[in-house]
Image (cartoon, rainbow, N blue to C red; front, side, top):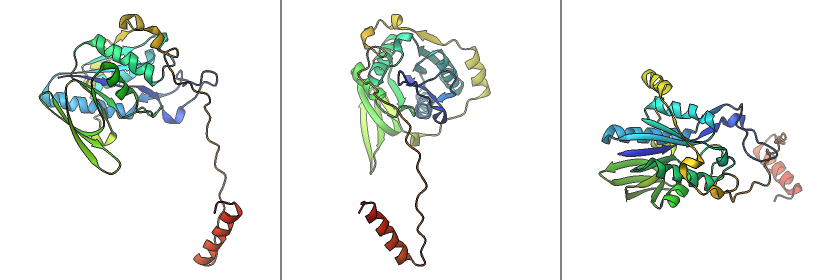
Length: 261
């Protein structure tokens, strides 16, 4: 079984900074981590490999520093790592990103499954995995919390707000997983040493032979008009009367004065 896992290096959520001119994330000098949902995707792939054999390739689009995230994935047990990196990819929205990653998947050749995390914690769109499936013209299963493979048949349990749905499909397929699917393993000492010695293949726009009008900012129909931090909450009003009835009466009066009720 040939599995491709898409991973993203994201800023630590407590350290997010925005360029006020371009309205894009500032990544230089900002602590970065592997997107947590993508670690669940990698763990899913590694478990399938242990059950059925095959190869796990991790794929990421980003600047050169994203190699550190790929090395972490190699230390967890991935077999190969590929970085898609070029200035032409800068500022890409989900459509341009999924187009580029789909082109990279075609460049890599045969695959059975593409596994992605449900979403990235910096954008929270949950769009890249499904859009990749559309670019590649293959089936997709999203919000997967349990995954089984029998031959070329994929059986997945999908997580909904009020129920679970069981769906079957055939290779090739894109699957996006939620955090409840597993607990990602830690890197082993042997894996860390192997990752340090590994060469990570880098693909550029020229290597992918893509339409450059569909890359980066030029290929991104999503335009950010404004980014701002929510205003800080002020201290609330404390209501503390002798009885609950008096407290409720005081609360209702304040809500009426504010024209909320």
